[in-house]
Length: 259
Ligand SMILES: [Zn+2]
Image (tube, rainbow, N blue to C red; front, side, top):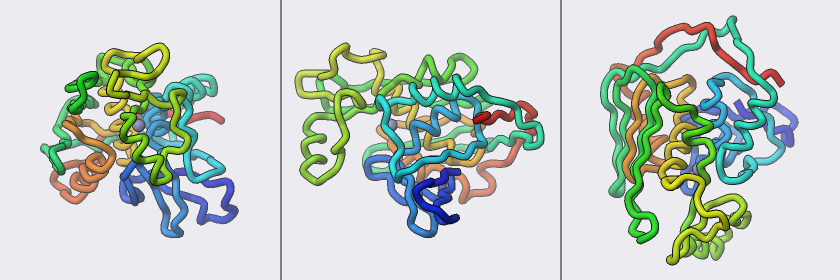
């Protein structure tokens, strides 16, 4: 749940749920029935999910979450500083994927498959000599979120940035909060944080978007040229079919941010 501190009454509460997503054009946008929005929640939600937190109230004083360095790294660091504690009165439940669910659109697809653990794999395929095809798989049994995915920054192509700026978007975008790619390659000093940073950021976005399911997912996500829109469409398709998923488990080690 998000709470907009700049809005005094209960209309400032915005649910962090898949069915509150109203736009996915440039980032994920949540809205409540009063039209109060939260923009770009995915990197913070990914940091929370990556820290095992599935129950938190997030207070913000503006409609857009701070982009920080374009990754989840600062959020992960601060969650680590504050610490977490079990919430034994609220047993954790999982959403178990029971059968394959797939969505596709515009040359991209995303699917959820049954799995004994949470996995996310993404393939990107850009017609750009310095990017091309990249693939990354996050396996929750083998890797940790902060190391494998958390530092991967959002990215954009220079020609897209010029197009967006001409239309009033991406005014805050800079080399401090995104990987920028020109026809000559990566423009950022210091280059990339991982050789496959772009594919890893796609995985980060998926983890953030899937956190809107309302509970951790026991299943495997696979995406090919997917994005926020397909991620949300996939959750809507999953929850539209009662035979595709079920509530599962009650684990005592539920955690939340202390303060
Ligand atoms: Zn992102």
